[in-house]
Length: 173
Image 1 (cartoon, rainbow, N blue to C red):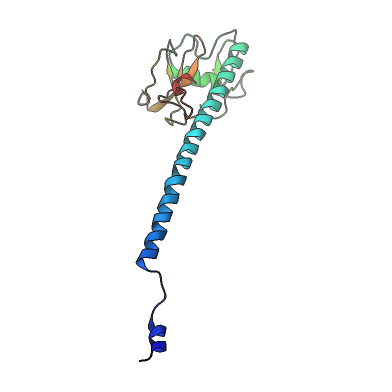
Image 2 (image 1 turned 30 degrees about the vertical axis):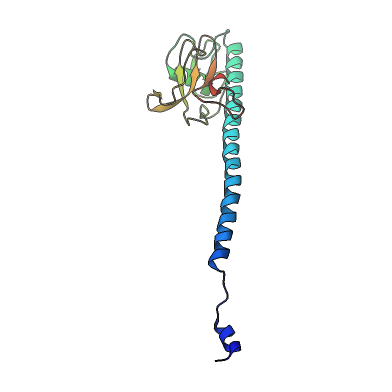
């Protein structure tokens, strides 16, 4: 067997060392890129929370303006009163009815937005929003609580604990 025949029979491929070098390089790249995606995910959740709070707060103010300076569910502890006030049509006195049957509202279309951190759409009605400690495990019937609301003052915040990417408290947004 001559050398030219021996070279033809030898298979071309990567050595174990070459494969290990490629795997190490891919590992280093993954270690530098993945934390950036995690940070982006947290930024997106924070942005959605801020946007949803702005929407809820503006619609609460509009409701108050149109309903004799009273916020939704004023004088009530029933979360359905809050939900109906924002999702159905109503009279100036706050009596709700199907969409389009009363002159005011709806203030939100479809449903209360889900809190991006808890996934909850439920409302916890309280008397002191700033003094309320978020409880992400709290339940409102069968629904996870996403929002904490005071119908006397119109204050609303997310049912969140922890901090934003910039270090601000999530429950103070």
